[in-house]
Length: 189
Image (cartoon, rainbow, N blue to C red; front, side):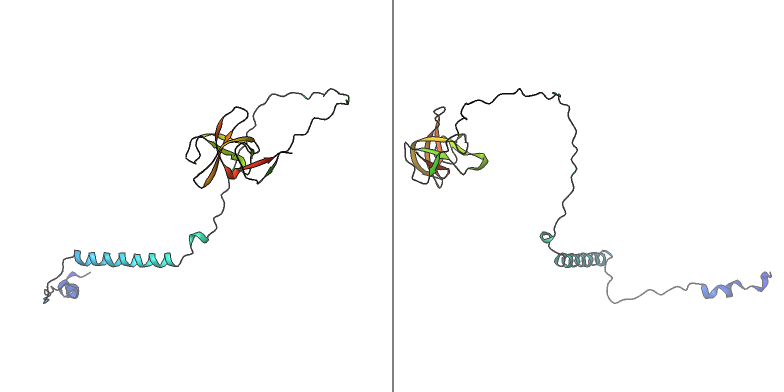
């Protein structure tokens, strides 16, 4: 290679960077943070518009039927005492009468009065609240089971939208108040 045949300055001149003249603008340039802030505000506004569009055009959550989740229950056996079966001894038939059937007390929608016997009805599994005073906020003595019979010893008293009757439990003599809508007068046969 002949180094004298290469003219380095002339060959590289088209690649040389020429100095630029400074730009003269009639107005003052804005600081860099102003366009950055404007861009950030525009991007945030665009995100809000997209979120509003998506929320307005998706199905309502209450119309979606959620699939039930599967649950697994593991039952572990517990040890119990084993009693072998035993034979029931033979009892010859006897001429004794069958036990008496319990009498079913008939109730009516007749008005309740002091001295009458009433039966607790239509209370469901929880029974009738037996309270110290004739109102719903009074202390609860206990729950009277459905079908039980009590004697009316006082009343009526109106409170909390109910008519209350004072009842006496014949088994232990406890007195308390019960709402009349759950009481029916017993009809004597």
